[in-house]
Length: 106
Image (cartoon, rainbow, N blue to C red; front, side, top):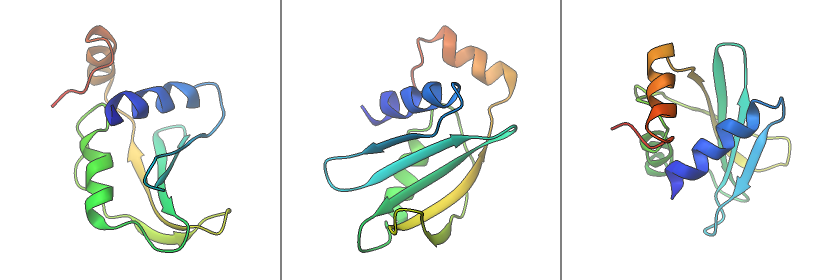
């Protein structure tokens, strides 16, 4: 389910708008498309998300992403957040995502 949510969010960013979702457990995910990367921000209201939450989001990213160390920030909504730039997929990886019905490639 998280993989499909992230896929949908990435698709939503192609229209030039940030994609934001709040999960049941209070974790917020935000994705913004940049020219050669996506800005990924995960946040909580009063505490920083933990490393395991960060790893889980990366694990469900629709293409393989090397481990990326996020920065700790306080975002524009005053939430405690982890932020990093995720490189866009190589063209062949993006093509596989479409061909496989936007399923996770693991």
